[in-house]
Structure formats: C-alpha cells, structure tokens
Length: 298
Image 1: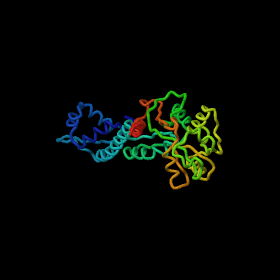
Image 2: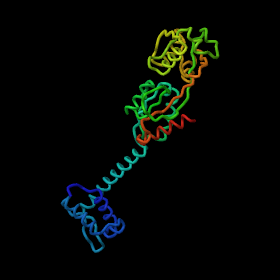
Image 3: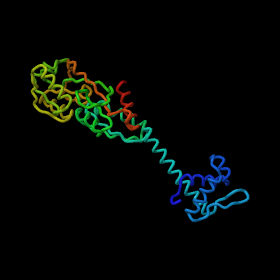
Image 4: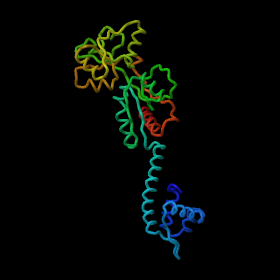
C-alpha cells in the first residue's frame, strides 16, 4: 500500500473504538480476515505497529492512538468534501451566469435575486446587463447560463419560458404640447423630437419598426445609453422619450416629467427567460430558472 486508503482508515478508527476486529467485521458485513489484512497493510505502509492483541480483543498502540486521532480529522474532511459536492449536484451550491436587459434588471431582478439568495445563500449569481439580441446570442454560445430578454425575432434555437410583461409609456417634460395628454398614439408623437436609447436596444428597434410600418421617420435629437440619462435629457426639454412604465415611475418621480399612456398594442412587451437546454443546466441554474418563472407568473 503506497497510499493511505480511506476505507482502511475508517475501519481502523472503528476497531480502535470497538476494541474488536470481529465486532467491526460483523457490523460492516466484511470478513474479519479481510479487515485484518487491511490493518496489516496499514502497519506495513506506516512501518509501525498500530494494534496490540489482548485477551479481550485488540487495543491501539501509542502510534495507533495518534493515527486514530489524525484519521478522524481526515475522514471528517473527506465527508465534508463529499457533502459539498452533493450540494453542487443538487443546486444548493453553485455559480450561475445571468445576462438580462436593463428593463428586467431595474424592474424585477433585484428583489427576485435577493429572495433567491436568501433561500440559497451558497449559490453565487453573476448578473450582466446587455441588449436582448446579444443576450440570446450569449446563451446560445454558452457565454451565459440564463438570459432574460424582450421578445423579438432571433435566430438561436433556445428553450424559453414566460417571465414578466412590462408596458412602454411616453415621457415628456412639463410644458410640452403632449404633457397634458393622458393617452397618446405613437403617430401623434412623431411630430416631436425624441431622446432615444442606443442603437440595438429593443425599444429603439421597436420604435424604428413602428415608424417604418407607417412610412414615417423618428426625429431623433440624440441617443443615450441608459434610462436615467434619457430622463435627464427629457426633463431638460431636449425631447420626448419612451421607456417601461415602472422605470418611468422610478426615474420621473419628483422631477419635471409627465408619464403618458402609449395607446399601441406593441406597448405591452413580453419578457422571457431563455436557456440552451433546461435539463442540461447545472442544478443551481435550474433552481434559479424555476424561481424566476414563479416570479414571472405571480
């Protein structure tokens, strides 16, 4: 025996505790001769006597007592390794890569991930923000385990699940010709300058598509890369903008911005969860998908 065998160490500890090879053999359903051979191999490997025979059975030598104490620590660590690896397999432990668009991150994910971490404190969730087109691509290429995106055409073969529905609204600065309206059609907004989101964002693509379907164009005064920058520019009077209702409520609260209902069927947007294959996900990622699905259906 060139290396210490965990099974032999475990049997040795039990022999020291029982004081009898026969008793351990009976309890473990192993032949006493097989256990004696294992002990002999231990003594040979360590080049020292570990057990001394007495008229009552066996007792540990000084070296055997030391080995038993050391072995208990080693065996405990090995049991802990096994237990923690089982936790990874079951999803209790793990690391999940999530990519989501800004609408999901601002409106829904903070509370949902917080609740998930309370139930699964040993699962690390790495969250990255991106646009919807990049999210589906990243999940397909295995650069992310889970994606959350606004439903839009994409060429990737992915499993998807319903998440939340959000509603797009118009925001306008106080004093703007549209600011007194409770409801407005998209066509009515096209006479005014817009502050838009960056190229490639789901909202920007939707506005361009809607304008093209009416054979009209959007007067884009400027484009920004975040919702808060859009609200700042709108408040300053540089144009009107479109963003999700809950985002508008958060950023427009207490500032000079009016939130106006957008009377268009496409203003209600479906957010979805996407994965390459749910069954192929690690246990922790499966738990998070199920948790997010429950939040989406609540």
